[in-house]
Amino acid sequence: PQDGRQRRDGADVITVRSSRIPGTQRRMILSGRRMLELLDDIQPDRIEVSDRLTLQVVGRWARRHRVPTVAISHERLDVALRRYVRSPRLARSVADFWNLRLAASFDTIVCATDWAGREFERLGAPNVVRVPVGVDLTTFHPVHASPRLRRALGADGRLLLVVTDRLAPGQWPELAVETMRVLHRRGIAARLIVAGRGPFHDA
Image 1 (cartoon, rainbow, N blue to C red):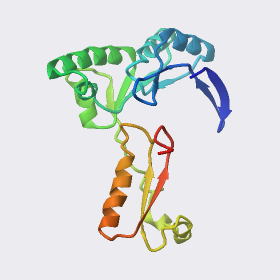
Image 2 (image 1 turned 30 degrees about the vertical axis):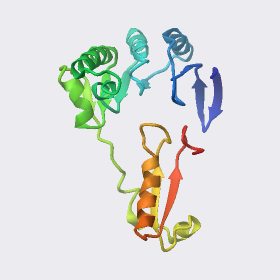
Image 3 (image 1 turned 60 degrees about the vertical axis):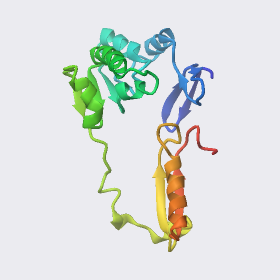
């Protein structure tokens, strides 16, 4: 709701006043000018962008200032647009137009899956890289299991389900709650631990 700057966990966290998206708890930065003023102020060495809808101006600023950039494409724009546009052909055309501009604005487009990368591949974008989402199997390995921690979490002798996620629309954290309902209906003793924050946190 307002601009701000604070030091948190060893990093400067800068918030930019932004507009609420109707019907959601999310906000969207609509003022490219405000972003450009911020970039001029902090003079970043590298830029990573996750919101590819509103922050293309950041890529263009970086290109002028010779700052390396990466844009993360988590999902497909053509598929997302189909929720709002009845014509699949129109949704694809709009997505193609936007994705061509995105690919031209950023040095690298990172897609976590082949599925996410296909909408760029069909455009022949040369700067798309696939970086698979995965789990560090050295850190997250059964040898590190802690019976003491399980007891502290109230899961001793019960199935333990742990969710680490942003508690927000589109991440579907409520699926974990529904999973617990199914387990309990089947007579399986289980404990759910949720680690995350977001608009659904209180719920």
